[in-house]
Image 1: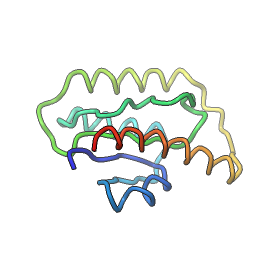
Image 2 (image 1 turned 45 degrees about the vertical axis):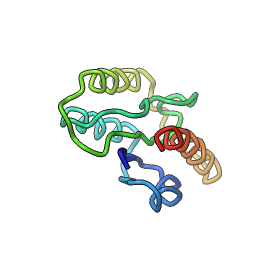
Image 3 (image 1 turned 90 degrees about the vertical axis):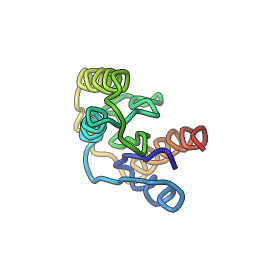
Image 4 (image 1 turned 180 degrees about the horizontal axis):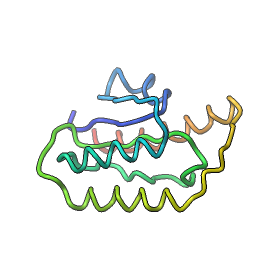
Length: 123
């Protein structure tokens, strides 16, 4: 596999870990963006857009991002995209939502389908 998935979504972990390199972290959406930014600065390349989908930042707690499996030279386009995504994320207020388990499940499914589409394109 030429990619890995960085995620805080337990559904992505359980559904894709057998077939994909999934790095699961119990951290916030914002912290996923920070982790991906640090990876991009370290030479990994973005392979999916960090703000994909129609659910706005701070409306969902889950995010999965596909990055290259191997380090290379720092990719200025990846760095530019992830840093702009973090700026965009910060423009949305943290609503402090306390979602019901069924709503959390829905958010997991949405993120899972978004990253599954990226995986399907990468394979």
